[in-house]
Image 1: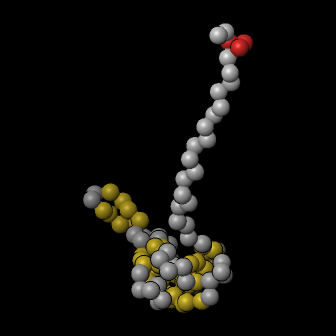
Image 2 (image 1 turned 60 degrees about the vertical axis):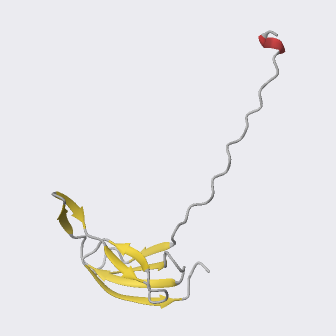
Image 3 (image 1 turned 45 degrees about the horizontal axis):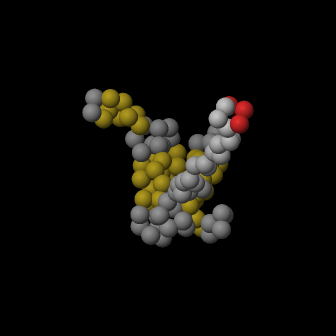
Length: 100
């Protein structure tokens, strides 16, 4: 067979990967002293709003600078709902999820 008479090869599509877990998040008031984040718990997907204040805190970890993460506990399931890089968490309140 010559190039002119070869059958075109069909490309086999790649298998579709399963969707990765994601978390809905909306941050408000980023230019104010007290900031708010609306989000869903990573584990139970319950709606939450958290208020926090301060800039991220840089600490030393194994001899290198590292940003400290505060684990925010979900009042619904008790698991870590989100990790925030801030100085202080003021409150966390359960709300109906805005993402349904």
